[in-house]
Length: 287
Image (cartoon, rainbow, N blue to C red; front, top):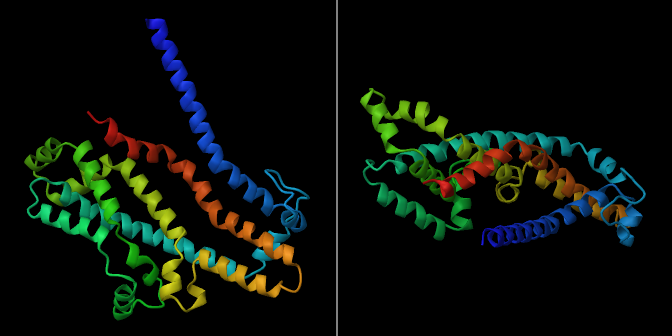
């Protein structure tokens, strides 16, 4: 019976490995194709001869993109929006989630219901636009950062993490020792929330780095465009300019812009991976 049990477990492990490997290939192969196409000859890309490896290695697409001065402005703007926005977002979300995780916080049920309702009922595009313009945020960096600085879903995740992973006994013991709420939050809660802090930082970085819609809605000054909007503008303008010339190069630029916009996230993700896995799974394996 023990041998049969081990054999069944081994067969299940093999099945899971094959399944996960297949799913990983589904995500990895398109990325490899895009990367290979960006480093291939434009003629080979249009001819459909590029697979997972570059054909007739070429850097023409990258040279064409990086000679645009706006690309560096876009990188700078996206970096500013990502750093500032992520810091404000994580701070606001933790400041909101902490009191909601406390059982002695009066009115938390009403606030929780109100927050959850906002996930299903929104003001809409026009009221949001009127609010942004009414607050004087239009055509400024804050129009990109502030409208999406708080996510109710993230607040719920942080609140649940605090409730399931940090016992109330720790907070009660700190209060007996004379600690106030702010000291408990900064000295006890935050150090114990490092995994979920890393997860929220990763969410914030990905969200702000890939953000483009707020810039389309609220930004007219092209010098304030984030990288995604700059790349889109370059792609559209170059497709029009190359319409009567090198059409193949215009097609290759699509792959180049995907690589340029995605590369920073692919570089930083490995540094957050262990925290990301721990933060996502720790609530599920608790007690």
